[in-house]
Length: 71
Image (cartoon, rainbow, N blue to C red):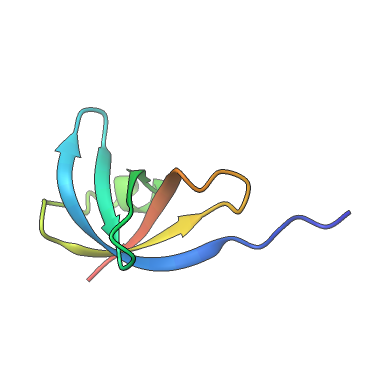
């Protein structure tokens, strides 16, 4: 059985939470919880509320995502 592919969406950061977690609003006005990917932590890429980002969401849990790119 093959793994499901991740869903990639654009979103806007609405709130910064502790431990590099963020609330992001998707294009469908749905709010989910997202965390910063390892490469973004490694290179100290800062994310602030209001930033446009790209997130990956697993098809198994649509309430959490990983921020993979900041515009």
